[in-house]
Length: 247
Length: 247
Image (cartoon, rainbow over all chains, first blue to last red; front, side, top):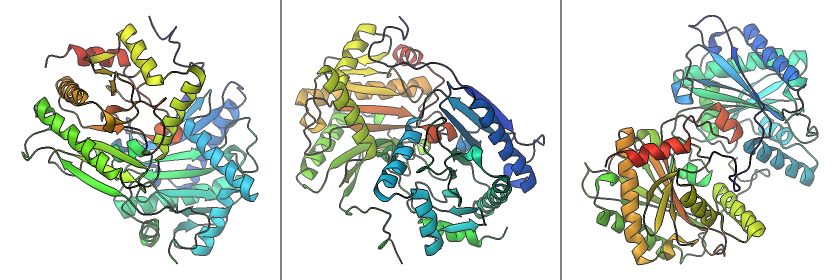
């Protein structure tokens, strides 16, 4: 007997998409070495594929991410990012959305807008800043040198970004990755685009952003057992180190 | 300004305990090489420390786990396990408990008791079996060769196990780790004791157990972005391989 008839366990349909975005034809280059103008084209490719795929109403969420380096799970050396479209809203995404909704219900404000305001006033966790984006080490980072790239304009949907945002996102993403490379000698890292589930009205309280996770520590028994993360470096130290490095 | 005055972010008190259980004085031995009788003493040490620490009512949860090998996050070579007592119930534990409670509310049965019944009838995911314990590869494993060690007697609290259970748990844990070593050439692994939060009435619906996670694949962008796990090996294949290996 296969998985049919397993009364205990739920099923979902098998619809989805998995696309690989090859970031450059040059095998020797990494994302951080590409000119910002080239990065901008990659971001447009993310957006164009999302806009196209979201016409399929069976898809509920589109994940865009990059694994760089073997320790971050990259199995191909040639620099690339990936798009996976899913027929359900993933657990972690649902939890993040719920957290934002609950903050909004209490305060009538978006939590990421609050974070941006607070980080700009504290100034101790800023890595990079431009008119459209802010890069910070989050107040409670799971990992050393974790970075969040936050759009200053409130929007739940990455794919609805303005043209000028793509240009400034490309510049600050390039700067952030070069800072990471210089500060930590080209570490393995993941980045993950956090954006709203498709066809859901999250516009008031959700705020798309990118999370960058360098792979410097191992996820071990404590993390698996709790969902909490042991991080030996304060975000203020991480931010200062990334900010001060010469690029 | 430090973390004080950060209105956005919650605080908890700093009470806790972190203890290291040194499993043998012999630096050259691994847990899988120790005689079952010796493993039994280690399990009694877990239990005795839990019974002692739970007298402190400020502690809400005791996590016992083992990191074996650098890829599993072990930073000390000498074989050891760890106990961390926390003043809150961790996210992952709360989610597991909630899942069990919800199954119980629907069916008036413990989900782990249901799983044991189903696995004993299917017999395709069994790794080892004795009168008190069943070792299976779970139906939806996150990782290749993930194993769950399930007590056949329903109980939410590891520390309330019967004396005879310690003996049979030591034997089956030893067997499982030796199967893993032989099947996969001594891989890095974590094991985590899942047991009820302290001072909570979970007795009807929760069921303590041990989860063993070999470290063979990298957690990458897809996993971080979704909370879902890509696993290229079916649990039936993993179980057969572990079951058939000569130990």
